[in-house]
Amino acid sequence: MKRAFTLGVAALALTAVTAGAAELKFKPGEDSKFNWASYEELKKTQLKGEQITIFGPWLGPDQQLVESVLAYFAEATGADVRYTGSDSFEQQIVVDLEAGSAPNIAIFPQPGLASDMAKRGFLTDLGDDNATWLKDNYAAGQSWVDLGTYASKDGAKHFYGFPFKTDLKSLVWYSPENFQDAGYEVPKTMEDLKALTEKIVADGGTPWCIGLGSGAATGWPATDWVEDLMLRTTTPENYDKWVSNEMKFDDPVVVNAINEFGWFAKNDKFVAGGASAVASTDFRDSPKGLFSSPPQCYMHRQASFIPSFFPEGTVVGEDADFFYFPAYADKDLGNPVLGAGTTFTITKDSKAARAFIEFLKSPIAHEIWMAQKGFLTPYKKVNTEVFTDPTVRKMNDILLQATTFRFDASDLMPGAVGAGSFWTGMVDFVGGKSAEDVAASIQKSWDAIK
Image (cartoon, rainbow, N blue to C red; front, top):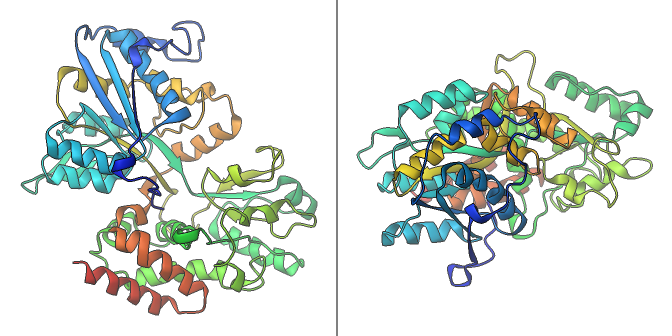
């Protein structure tokens, strides 16, 4: 799903603070759940008199959260840390890089844009040591190395992007009470999930709520379904080829994944309101059927943000819960996870910038944000006991158990496809067009921009 841009550069919102002036959220050494040893280790790097500028997409409460982490780097090293947030990051960072006024660290929400900047020579190679560290310390480590590896100006590939802060999409939401009343169990495999879908219908119920409506962005929820199903029906390598169009959109492998989505979404008995309601139902309204009495549906596949649209008063973990969108038992594809997140890059090299990347490798850098909200990490050495919300800890466990991680494909594809023909093609698909016709149409749109 593409981020929505509601403001142009002219309406750019920028705020900057000195993180070093912020109060430490958790007093070092007090709570033994935190890895304070990694904080003490950080003090060996002294950067007094050095300033580091960091530019990212977070504003408001999210800015306060990232600043709460940066404060530990500032306090331990003595560096003067300046964070600037913008809701037009993607436009502004290009302007800054082209003008030669880059920050030391740029935080990209879109790896595709980071890749473009590396190709233009604006990013600093983080080196093989950092790539190796990531491979060894993040769950599904090679996936993260690949995500941050881009071609340089001369075409050679280097490791430029350090992933830090992850979003999780491979979730199925349900009402534990409704499952218990009906005698249903959480499926462990895709075969079990399909069997449960058919059993719910046989019992007289409707298994799924699916809504693709999202105003001008209508269709994007279906792209997440297809991406998740690509990871469960073919190899991660084919997923990557699909993203780059080395594998054409109308390849049988992709058509098969679209039809897998159709198995769930194009059967009137499987979807609340019937298949014809899928495209017209707003994605924000679609999960509400989980909570009606009797339930309009029993399951809803959506990312970790969806509780924001649950009925007021819904308690996640009690009224609603989730399980991992499972993989097929009869395919040797491990436990793939679809998600998104941010990538940290050095856009103006310095001793402090290099030290900051080292800071991101410390457990304390993760645990400070984990102990607050809105932060998931595949870092295997953090203490997940610092999560105060057991629901978030459960999401993080899914990330830690992943064997493959892949970034949202539509966000990596050219905008005309990923935020254009892919969206509209999925609406056409649930409206009755065949997967073959839709895929061919999307490929045609891709060919047109080459």
